[in-house]
Length: 275
Image (cartoon, rainbow, N blue to C red; front, side, top):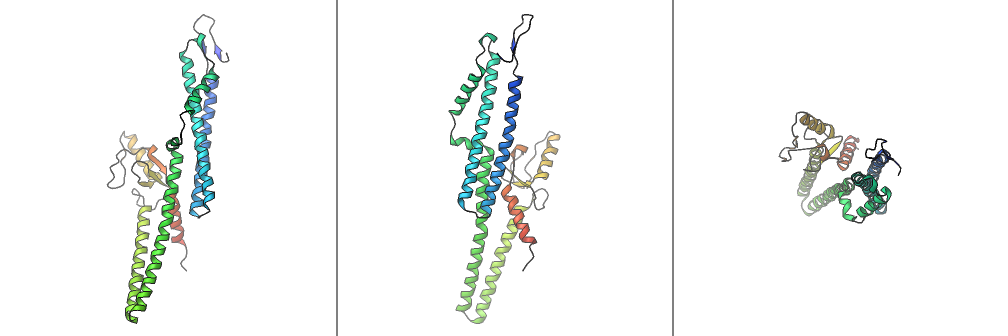
């Protein structure tokens, strides 16, 4: 059998799995390529939603994410099957060593037989993708609602102006304009609050979301806090006032692509010269 060795002194033989383990290492590196592919597909899908491109294009990205998730699952299962087969062989006496290839195939098929669509809920990238699409759609709806509200306020002011005397109509228009400005100020203030890091108190550039409590921070700032606490063997608490999450880990943090896009869009509108 390839890779099988034995000593001349009569001691028990052994099998070297260095070649198999090297191949496993190469397989695992492919998972990083799958991860990069999922990041790209997710980014394109968000671009399509943001630019309100036809739904069929967005659906294509959704299908691409499913394909990536399937590849990731199959690769993980194959690696798991090989590792399980190696452990099985190591426990067997040398004279009872089974065919490693057949054993891997058997274990791989056993894992695949348990596959279901629910498995995608365990794929962090896929779950994050679906949540980001949902969040971006919500953010896209809010400006439209605010625009419709402003249009309604203007019509209401004009109707009030026509219904009453000229002076009363002018007063009504002023009140409508005042309400409109107040609504716009509230929207801007709320957005700026959401864009502000609770640690630096500055507008975020690379926001990350805490999967546990849902709060967002500037990536560099929260990473610095976590590392500082861990060096002193302490737990890092969520810096958001009132949050009860007392053990923030690096693994809890995910890139908040939707918020980053919203901040960039807000910044472009703010920097745009007024007409």
